[in-house]
Length: 202
Image (cartoon, rainbow, N blue to C red; front, top):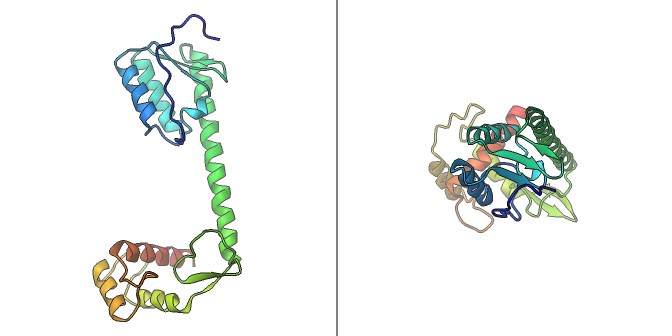
């Protein structure tokens, strides 16, 4: 398809998401672009390079600064022309839209499952346990969450106690993790964030 170019290298990012450019293979390609070791970067498909319009825009500027063209074999695009750059930008917007739509649908589906108390994860969230594939309240953990709510946390994030103080207070009251140990500061922080989100939603 590109008989007028010499193949210098083949770079792959097997199993890596195209959500951003923070990937080993892409880093290697960017080094070749910046050092002008290549004149053209060929990709099989644009959305396998990136699905972020911001990343795509930054990448196109970087390519243009080094006078390196981006060619997509599937879409038959070439950024060495103004029309090619315009179409690449439009496709980048569509790719990001698709990614965000998928994320929204996934989030909405999980919300419906949570509201129906249906199983949506392998591990039940704190305060619940699974019984016959459905979430039911775990009384012991529910009391622990109530104790945490009573420690003064509010939606502004203003906490009169430190995370470690809260962990110690919970442990002293007999509220431990599922492994039988005091909650870590990170675990307390995640539970406080969940409580904050619940209050905001309410």
